[in-house]
Image 1 (tube, rainbow over the protein chains, first blue to last red):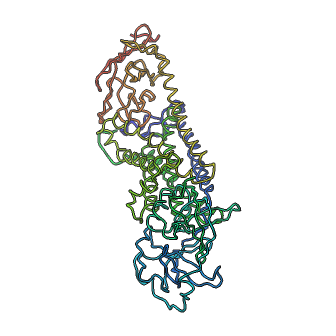
Image 2 (image 1 turned 90 degrees about the vertical axis):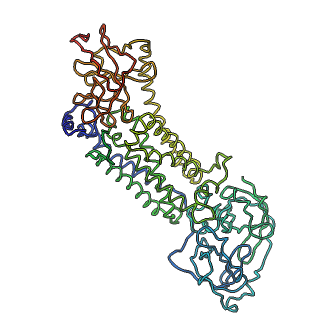
Image 3 (image 1 turned 60 degrees about the vertical axis):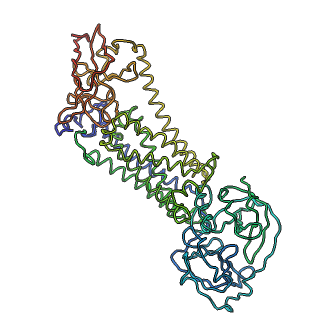
Length: 268
Length: 354
């Protein structure tokens, strides 16, 4: 608008019907209104932001320790998923099992066939949640993985860990990807994480079955097929949904596996 | 006005408006992040990236909610016209925040896997046959596409080249986009988070926006309905001349659904279309300033007698022939071509035509 037009509206004129025009000075009545409305808007905005963020659910106890490289020495196995078993006299059953996953969401490309069953020393980023641990490593073999002294790693006790069937059970809970659940994503449960969990499991990250006991304790079991092999991709549509399944609980070393046919899972 | 195109035609009000929008948006996101990281529900720190994704999503939805309330609020009270003046900058700000939410969520949840992230967005949750299980991400994506098209065509260059009706129709898609975003939240975050605050706030925002539009729309319907008897063939009896406030207008419905704005300025009465050439703003809710009809939305101006913007501007709107007979103002419902000069009806001291 022309400069000449700007002088037409007198900001001092106290006419309640005076109209705000963007290219002119605001009328006094609008200025008075804005002097109250603008701070009120900021206060309402700040209050709403605080309220919304303050009500978020507990994201879980996981941790992704990206600021340090962690080294573990033990026996590497590929079955049903890549994992390293290491001797630990203070741990239940005298050993700890650490799942091994690649960076990102594609672990299925991790080729460990040549060193599977051997004592290794591996370094990577540790992911952990309430005693459960996972090592995140580069997708391709490199300096992060070295053969270790077999005697030091006690391979005989770790290569074939004690397997104990604990009986058949019908479990209700949620299928999630172990990597996010252990600490990479917080929160890692629920529908907002369903697509990510599905993508991770599709990429080869081990699926886990998460259930909460009546007294509030978390129970997490590594999912396998009925024979103890890697779980089929048929479960992908059910990931992150409330499901139930009948299967067998088996202790392998220090971890619990839930062995069930993928077709036995039902959405609740 | 639009005789030439510049990226932004700045003035003092626009600068103040934009600074306020940036400050409030930045403050909202900052408080969300600080609160989310500091409160640590259950004693567990939140994931900063996911928290940021949520902060951006909440901010974008809040901005769109505010944007959609401005129109009806400005119809209900002229005190809200300053919010409307630079609303498109608020819209572009919302688009930038929504883009960051979309981009970061796509990267964080869908990148680095065995599928293309955009493919993963649509197939990782295949429950399209279920309402509670429906993949909320796809709803957000469609809403984002609409918002992108709106932001890309927000400049007056597109308004002029697409024509006002096409542009207006395109930008009315903001309502389906808002509905999609409400469902994006309902079928996503609300199915994950336990707090009742979120359904209350989301539902409240939706009801507030809907209610305001219904209330403002009801006011227009009632005004139109009050003049229903005037919808006859031939010239339309609008009102008595002095029923029109000086320098303002009475809006009357026309038989074909359009509206005419009948202005009184001193002892003269002229009639023009109620739709501004710029963004279809309600000219009849504006005023005559400096001898020109001035749109309440963005201050575009037209001379009452010929509907042409004052030099150097060249925009034109349709005019209507008007006359005063037996103490009543009559309007010919047939519009003149935009920019057609008409003879204003003249009022005598008693309100009858001279």
